Length: 454
Image (cartoon, rainbow, N blue to C red; front, side, top):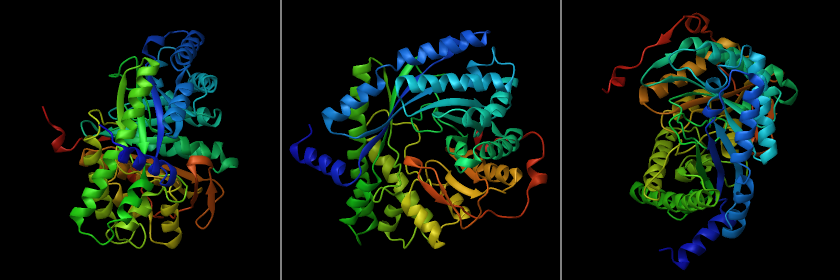
């Protein structure tokens, strides 16, 4: 039973500590829309999405108003479009037309983003996969709400280096297509190793083929709540520190569980998972970096940062799994530079580098996220950074991701503006030494020995 103390405590978290439900995401299977005719396929996709999600936004607003819980975004994820469009699409332009249909459907139902313009190519690319990947710059520059992801590797299959090389070129091309808006298309594009099928957060959300026809996934967020809790145990032992984080994560996750169950019941759609990630925003007091400082660091990036982040990530998971039987997605601590004012401050102070961020990704829940780099960065260098991050995920049996934004026309010392939850970011320096001969090798990096679990 929830007592009055807990009710008051939750109200305080919402009013003063930036607690919110970051997103209600409806996953929708499009497998039953497959058609050899592109026009019929687009009609089926539009109809399936608009009928399935017609009440999603209103339901989210009703729950928010009735329970007093801010629900920031309402989103949709769909079956990876490379699978859905393979029969009908003959060119990259055909796939880009599907992206416009997704965008139209997202506008019609009023959601903030729609994810699933995706391809899963960890072991190899079909012709449809390659066409979709080559269409990404066109698709993202020609739509407003479509998000794209590509899974390039996994612990079980290794890393598809042909796809890694191609994605370095695609990211740079997408940056050029939107150079007038600080290469904003790249903010909606992420590459993965070990991508989860049930992630409610964009840009990496897609509806996995093992999921039900429709599903409700919820992502909660409360960096400000955790920081405030830690302020009360400043200077205490690690045992007290860990217990405080666990208890706080439990309370935050229970709010997400409540919203998820309520949305599921009202929409008549099965409840999937709660993603208990600490997802920051540019708002002051809503920062994972600030939590690290409260733990005892002068700035995120100082010696001890990786250990502090590992501790935080683990305790968040331990607390969260006690609050819900169905925890999934990414679940842990996010470290996106542009979306976290504390991370931005650390970069500006010279405490946080790309290399230190890479080390931190070994123990966090995502990877190199929302990092602005010079616009003249070579495609092969971007591919090399991606390969490094995919290797971390593959070897450590965890999800890792890369969302880099080469900002065309800007260099180190400049600033990129993305707006809203996407925030703003200083341009970070990139290692200038080349890796062309490495990324230009053909084939894939084999799976590690511990991948053999059968």
